[in-house]
Image (cartoon, rainbow, N blue to C red; front, side, top):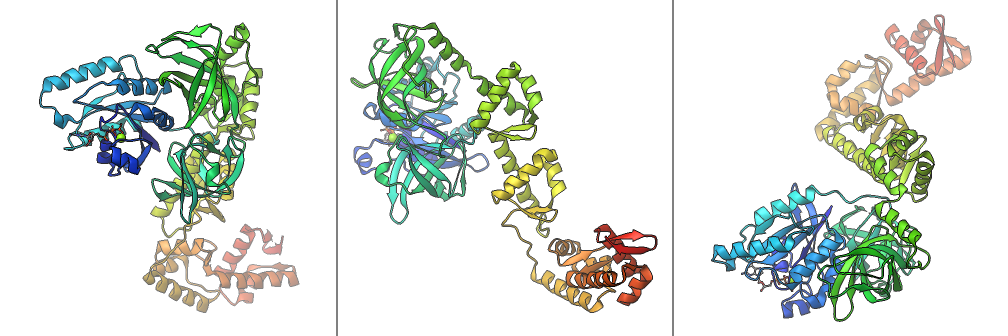
Length: 621
Ligand SMILES: Nc1nc2c(ncn2[C@@H]2O[C@H](COP(=O)(O)OP(=O)(O)OP(=O)(O)O)[C@@H](O)[C@H]2O)c(=O)[nH]1
Ligand SMILES: [Mg+2]
């Protein structure tokens, strides 16, 4: 699941390009149509690669609406950076580039658009050279530049290929089992209730899940989930999601609020952060300055506390504590942007190091700065989690050894991950939440494939599934238990199946089955052999009848229809209860049949531990 975000100067053709790529006009407001410009975020989607659905967030380029742009680019995987070939680099080209750079977006493609307006190849080359200069030293330094025209369609195919190539190479969004969705849009649909949209982070949402709205702490429940207008049961991290929430009124929801699993995230009015001040900022970042903070889809007025330095000069990095005018939610390692409120100017941005520092720090204390330096490099828990991702599932001892930490630190780090629900511990083995979710996904897809290839089998043999997933019983057994509890799998004896799977016979097969079962019930004890049965209905159907419990096979030769089997076994047990023991000849006489069936039945009863053999006789166990 991926999301692309546009960026670039006003009127450079972002929305037109999005429509040309997706068939969806992202400008949905009447005012946007009238003014022929994007004001608020627009949303579209397209299929790339092998049909992978990719969300698109279209942002406004006009500087008056840059704050809407900031609400949109927080969750993107890749920037579609649009530059009009006739105008080239313009002020918001630079400003949007600086923002993408501060947000450290995963990558980008430069669409040099409106090439249909350019006749002079020298001009195109000039614009391209200027672009290279502008991109140098930024996160998009090595981004490919693709000349396109949304009007003629030139280059759009190659642009799609490039987008997919870069997206599919990107790290998928982590699943930390801690779902949160920064809300970027709120609306209501008649008959449907309140809907919020956003890019889902750090976990999955399922229909019926309880949720908590932050910072208000209101509680609700997920009534419906959609991505790109398709209904879902489960939404995955990194996807654009629309959630229909019951229990919270529309008036209570706002852009910038966060919908999360209860207890996953809490609000704050104080943040510790690392910060980079833009080199072309008009002045230094000073202590106690009023700024606007943008994080997730939220925007809030804040005051700076510059730590360990008097101020942060253009082009410099430093440490900040931000004191917010109202509560917001942010997680450690979230990226943020600071702007000057008026006149509006993007100042810089950075990384949230601690969303709950608890108190105001003294400004010039070595221990405060040291702590921030450690946090910037990663806490022991984070480092341990990284090692775990590489090795999982892995035994605790081995993990500790491989982490390179001293035992005490590693044990404490693991305990922290445990209380935060970031890992799953099964006896001695440990997995990350993400690894666990991956296994559940793999389990589901393996079963799905098995059902497709073996439509007449009720389910996949447990052992076959375990060896296909290459898991030890110590991981496999709890996995199946969890999958069964989550209603992802159903156990049928030694078989596992998806809840929706069932065996369906064709009309011809149904007729053959009915005729075989009739024949067997007439035959009684002297039933047709396994081979005859297989010939009558075909091997596949025969095995299906076993799976369905309609037939009971005793050995390579003897098989019964289940009602007959129950009746015959009942007869033998009754005899044993009366007479204490039975031998083959007595069985044969009791059932009025041949030795072959008598022995098959007795051996079978030994096998299933109803009887045991004593000399030539059987007694009840
Ligand atoms: N000739 C030509 N015109 C284009 C092309 N792409 C966009 N335009 C025109 O450029 C103008 C601006 O296009 P938009 O797509 O609205 O630009 P935008 O970047 O979304 O603008 P904002 O969202 O307001 O920042 C419109 O009049 C488009 O018709 C193109 O490839 N060729
Ligand atoms: Mg637009």
